[in-house]
Length: 168
Image 1 (tube, rainbow, N blue to C red):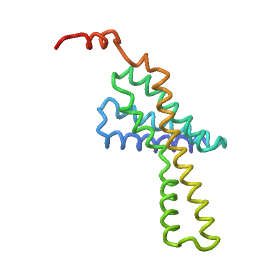
Image 2 (cartoon, helix red, strand yellow; image 1 turned 45 degrees about the vertical axis):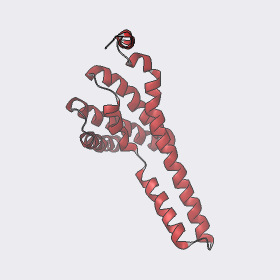
Image 3 (cartoon, rainbow, N blue to C red; image 1 turned 90 degrees about the vertical axis):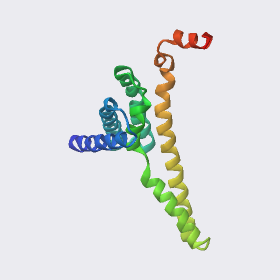
Image 4 (cartoon, helix red, strand yellow; image 1 turned 120 degrees about the vertical axis):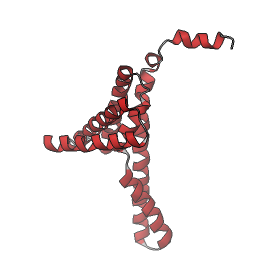
């Protein structure tokens, strides 16, 4: 099981780096995005192995990415979104979104006749709700860290207030 967790973290590390490069993340944030993506996805994978559920596991992984991202942002002096966004992309529920869209297309093509359509509708709605829930978990996990540390993330608050009183 440890090998599987390390393999998952290793692959997610490269996914995080790939999306960081795609989003033109500064060089000092690319490695951080990869490490956060690998560790966050490894947390999700480990919790899934212990049967915590997909939504709970995803939320835990993104909360870890968000909290660690705030810490890393202070260390390398960049905004946390630079590397938390590429790190969270490793957990986007693409398969469930694909199944939702495919189900909608099949319902449209087949019409409303028969028992098969009822099953297809149920499956499509389930996949849509799961996709929506996982996307909300990604957003909430990142926002929790930003809300907890919002005053600590703003450096030199006094200087920001002074900017409003200066004459240009």
